Image (cartoon, rainbow, N blue to C red; front, top):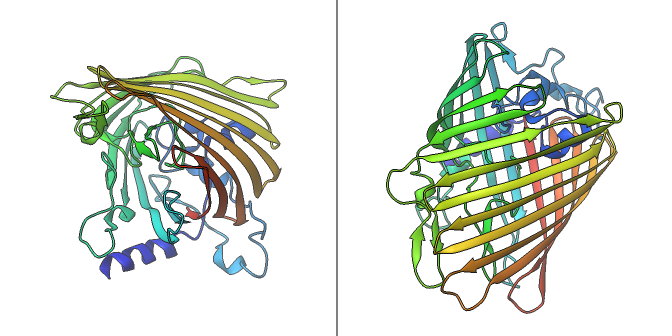
Length: 394
């Protein structure tokens, strides 16, 4: 009951939103760090990120129906800009595609509170806590948690001058590939004959430090060194035996570079980049990119290969195309494919997923996302399912 009350309280707090996703970078030309406190995106949004969708909704904020929900002096910044608060509440309704008689389940995917404190311009303390990670399996006390998933993260970000590199130290997610808001997407998973499994879990974090350098305004480079306790929880199989993704106490090294050119008088927004995440015999290499016409259409892709030497290799690809019909409504289609090769398995495993969906901003700071998913696995035929998300963020 206490956990339910916590989630309900957080749900009520999420009465407003803004959005800074990869597809929005392609639709408006802002790179991830423009709208987020973290240099590689994700997590707490800064004031630009918050205001970017301040008045986007099918029902406008000044409508007599909902105007009482939106104070005229609304803001996420307090104490002369030194304190910044935010939250993400995400609820999903879905059915398992593995069982044709599976019942629909509705559950909190995310109930995260964010905070950042900046006593001086050159120094920021930031952190987050996801109360949804307290959720337990039905009729048990066992938490529903992915290997490597954390309930919280925090870091200190230091940058004495905009002309100098930024240093981040703490317990946080390394800069790997592109940050997506849907952990069911293929890029950081490996496929089995009937499903997909996380390698980089939602809310994954490690102890470590990261250097971000922007020698040019649109060419940020991230270099990091991290521990491996979270990654060691991930189990990978050669077809017969199971192994930890990493063993021992060796450090995990991360590197990421992204270019964000804007072309045709800033009407064509693009990004292209790659990342490397390595620990001894384990490696994850990603290449990604996208292009979008401002306030119109976008196309983005990512290709990731994950390998544990002499155990397995997984290759996953994702391509998504979307159309912003009006600011509060985006429709999209996504195709994903994954192949897993296990050293002792008789053959490769290959599955694919096709998703048709929409991002509908019902009113400012409230998103409804219906998706129709088609899975093609080793099971006979294909499985089709409707899934729904309701997202509140502030």
